[in-house]
Amino acid sequence: MMISVPASTANLGSGFDCLGLALDLKLNVHIDDPRHTGPPTATRHPAQIAFTESGGDGPIYVSSDIPPGKGFGFSGAARVAGTAAALIQRSGSTNFSELLEATTELEGHADNVAASIYGGLTIVSDGQVVRLSPHKKFQILMWVPDSATSTVASRQKLPEQISFVDASKAIGKATLMVAAMITGDKSALRTACRDQLHQPTRLESAPQSVIALDNALENGASAAWLSGSGPSIAILAEPHLTEHLRSCMPESGHTKSVAISRYGLQVS
Image 1 (cartoon, rainbow, N blue to C red):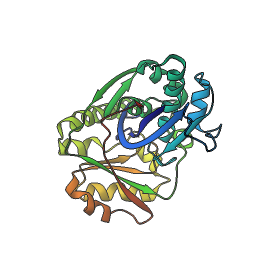
Image 2 (cartoon, helix red, strand yellow):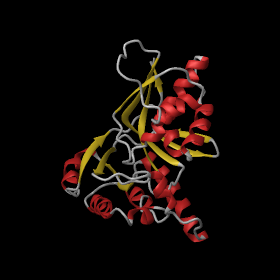
Image 3 (cartoon, rainbow, N blue to C red):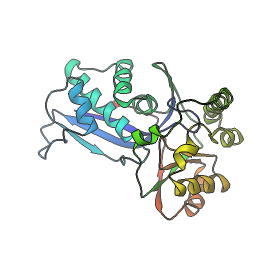
Image 4 (tube, rainbow, N blue to C red):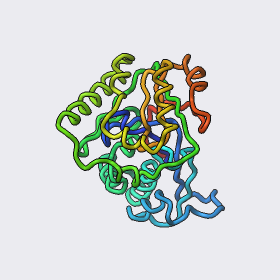
């Protein structure tokens, strides 16, 4: 049996811990599969930990297209796949609400895991998820630097409190981002992605990511944001602009075109 889940880009600007977008890069967990003759996944792998802690029995085998530490939701996808594998092994099926609760506890926040479970554009709050389909005219171009980021270390840099005014602005921009992603309103998207809630703090230690973000918005991107805790930059653009935007990115990294995944967790 194979459980397959997509990568994700989270926050989408000001949608801190509540907005996620599934990306068509896959992490697969294989269980009870006699075709695998190589060594099983290491015990410290997040998928194996999730599988074991959720009551799974036996080895698992992981294959993945998702780069770790780059802002593609690797740990979230691994925890979703590992937990789902254990639940299916135990009962023959998995309940998405149960899966969301378990993986949110493991991950510490729900945005990435919701996108990997449900696919598309997800909004999650207090265990409730709404899945929407983004406008079809856009695709994602990721600028991926050579460096990596620790999500735990990045979150520790964020302030414990913000002002009422800043909170109000963040709520407005996150709400605007959802509406603009559905309608395809480019002007609204460019406004919605300009975050002041968490990005400035996280970008202080990633000057090349700042350049990539600014260059994308100055050269026709519909939106751009720090993907999760970074250091990658997610660029939302119409396909005919992709090559031009590639040429505007810093040479200290590489670019990768990624389709938005319309599907979440799949079992085969």
